[in-house]
Length: 111
Image 1 (cartoon, rainbow, N blue to C red):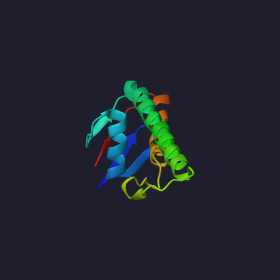
Image 2 (image 1 turned 180 degrees about the horizontal axis):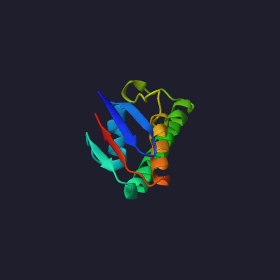
Image 3 (image 1 turned 90 degrees about the vertical axis):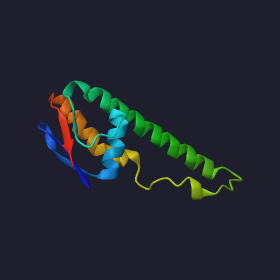
């Protein structure tokens, strides 16, 4: 299933369901299938998404540092990180949110 994000301030953004749900959960704290982020709430969503991206980068760096440490003999089977980072997934959404904020426009989505 695809999610389609729309706004008068930007072109449509289409995402796969899993990626869209992950970003919505980060931004809103729940997992709505259809909804709206009103322009006055955009700043909170942007901050939440940017904060999650920073935490993801820190976790990846920490994991990388741990793997490169002398004497590391860990098993990577239980903690495999996705090849595509949260930053890469979130960047189009962040651009759309910032554009919506600049033009005082709401963000809506559906499936």
